[in-house]
Image (tube, rainbow, N blue to C red; front, side, top):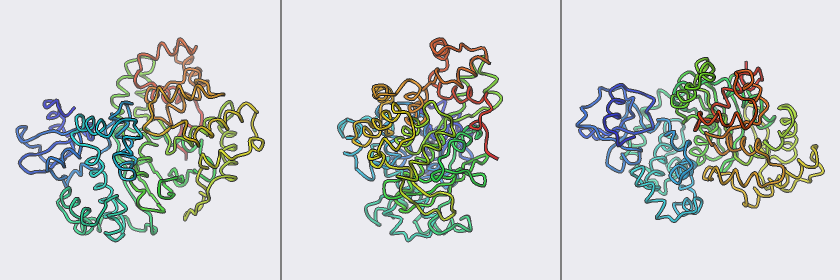
Length: 490
């Protein structure tokens, strides 16, 4: 979008928050860059230039605006809509892969050469993987500076910097303030009463956001010991690269309140990325709803409760296992099966607030489970053991970098995997916005009530007009039922 100057100027003049994250405005006369919705008086068009990423602005020598804080914009929805090389690379960078494995590790995960990845990102985003990761490190550093009392040296390494000097230079360059000055400015606004090691953050999103099915689904399917709904917040444990964490997510009208307790602060970037992915916070609800509203039978559902998101996951392998446990059983039965596995094979954690007791078992731990101890039909035991063995040995990868169509085909090749299981994993674990569940009982029931075709083939044909947002259509169709997944818990 940044190449369409006229459209960008209109967005800046109208201070349209829908475009935050789509592009960034750099002001030639002041040397700063802003989000489109910046509250200051818009500069003259001749003094504006537009970039596709904060990293590109920083590489061009611009510093972040202190008013609109463009580094806190929602991420571009493109990276969750697409499955090409650039989108997959951006999802990996957001997950901290460059900081942990370097650019060669990023390229290896994508199956391309380092040069190809750098060339593609530079062409589309105006910055290579190192610059994009550097911009992310700067944002992580600012969060740690402003929300914790950690020493600056600890923050430097937790944010992924190789030295304190690089940390200081980057913060000054990006924010035009030293780390200590950033902390001083934030002291009066820091939330009081946090327990040691807890970070309180605000996760932005593009409005509207309907929390009912999003948090309702997560709460209704919560696995005891791993997840819970308490005091208006969804809480769960997180398995992270350097340790474990506990997160509490509370819906608010203009943001999601996020409280993170991390065993290792180096996991902050990854934890935030996974929480945003879990709640589908980088989606563009206006684009989705406008497309679905064009169908006269879906339009009343969209108008009644716009802004539905797809509840996703913080751990793709975990969700795939839970999808198998939930085959042909009720939500309550699936939770019971999962809770037994958690108690027997999950890693225990200490929750300062009580209620959460374990991490969901790793695939390596599940691969050692005796199938005879599983209280399920023999065919589903085979499905379970085959899945976890493929996940444990790496022959099946469900990470954010995977190609959706290829991974779906791999899942369908496994015993016991039909279209419903493969598609629900594609929708909620892989993040495919066009995944569809025409064989789902709830979808077929809703289709019949609305006057849509109720047979899978005919419904799939009708749903072609909803592409590429069929996963969101599923949420609106599910919402016609009175199942607890569709209601925000009291």
